Length: 310
Ligand code: NAP
Image (cartoon, rainbow, N blue to C red; front, side, top):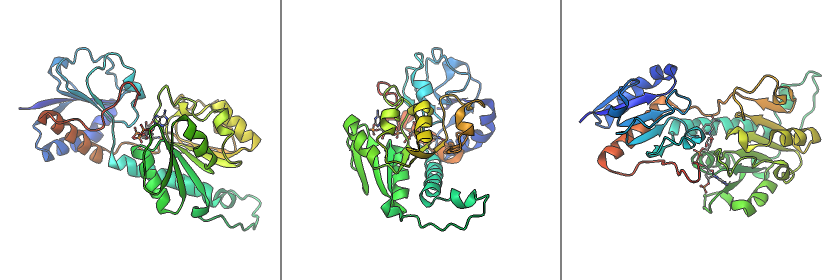
């Protein structure tokens, strides 16, 4: 039987995803009709971007699951009309992208690259950075992305500390969890990486109190979500020299407004939410596998827990 799969994302995404999705459905032996346009009552699965025009799921009475194209689901979990299973995206291509992006920005701070790249006085000022094994890196959020980043950084020799909601062992990483574990984790963070989801419990994780617990001169890298950081507290910590630099990929409001002080701050690097885009070919394979599971009556992968919001 043919399954009707609605592609509900911004129109410009259709050209990128149509062929990879159809190829992945065929590879899984799924007889699929993929379209941006169905009568709602005929739809079996919804491939979804939370910024798409589809916001009312009520008429999709036959749909078995919403398969999110993004890792972050804060825009979908709050939708009261979305009551069927919601799977978030865990895409090997996206994960590789995130590990590369984070590793690059960690190495920039670790090696002190800026002092040679931005050197208008042509100063001949050699300095020897510590080895990675002498540098404490901390990752808040040790899920699909945080764990992969940790594996890359431990591979480079860094001493990696991780923090999660629940207790978990991760090989090669010193793990903390829960509210008590946060202080211990922050104290190790010469370079701090935020890879938490945006939920009511994670908002302002990096507030003034948390920033005060970082080693003096720490660096902050945020490819997670904007609301994880209290912007004013971070700016104050940068101005006081407690935090030496910050690379921010995500913001409370995107695009970041031209007036926001992050743009002009000499210690802040702004990147426009580019750390890890979903990669159509690898993501299509994940979506096809979830549809195969749905049709076989097997549990979906990467289901979102509505009560925790991720
Ligand atoms: P994930 O697999 O769901 O992992 C989330 C991690 O955060 C889990 O380890 C979880 O701990 C931890 N966590 C959640 N709430 C917490 C809390 N209150 N206290 C402590 N730890 C908490 O998510 P992911 O795939 O790694 O993605 C993480 C986030 O990255 C996404 O939500 C998205 O916001 C962001 N992202 C950004 C980009 C970009 O381009 N900038 C791209 C992709 C994703 P437990 O394991 O104990 O539950």
